[in-house]
Image 1 (tube, one colour):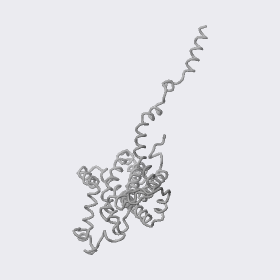
Image 2: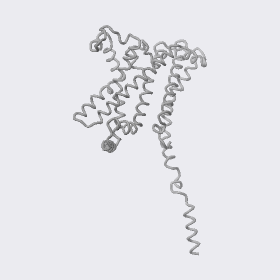
Image 3: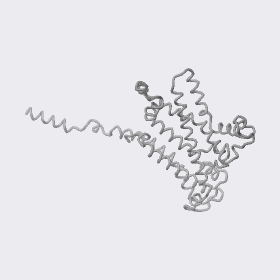
Image 4: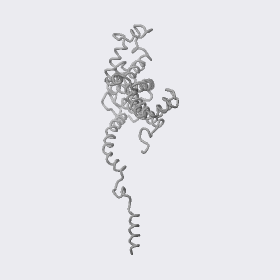
Length: 311
């Protein structure tokens, strides 16, 4: 009987479910249950403007008065409008140019700020000042800087005529807008990259120096691979943000001379010359382009680095 009792007890222990299961929901399920209300609120807040823009784009308008159902007519008109494709080109030129130079300059700034030297605090503050200034104010400042009167860019840049109109000339107007954006946002990229640099153990660089690695070899074989998550986040944030740029071209050139981006175009038809149907179609197409670029970006550079490998 004693043996039977022990076997029964042993069998009972073997058949007992794990403690985590016996308590009901697992930790992952419990976490998702707690996050569900906030995720639902975020989806509603972000999703309502998109759904409303799609709804408005399906109607015809006379001014702001709705005159009838238009179906996909606004999308056909938007897709066949050369002005839309010019805006797409201007948006991508601005995005590629600004993000490229912001990454290069931001990396240099981050490497400088990561080194220990006298006056590093002051240097960090000086580098980050442009990022603190509101974009509209910096746009107005660079408008006066590049303007003929009373700007002084022409007076300090050699080989530039005094009457050269940066903001009134094709290509150079886009250069001025990109220049202002790089000045404004490169410190933000530097801040993201600096956070990544400070997670790299110093022992790796010490081992590299012992093995005779040069500074470039340490940067290429240690810094760049370990900085990849920070680089991805910086490029993703800046690319998506640059695709939606509005304030800089609106203030500096009002979208003239090849600087009319998609956001400036949308504002033109939604606010300045009201056509909510066509403006909403432009807005929906802009959202689709930004979403597509973001998905391709994440797929190409590593979904696990953005969302997490365990998801």
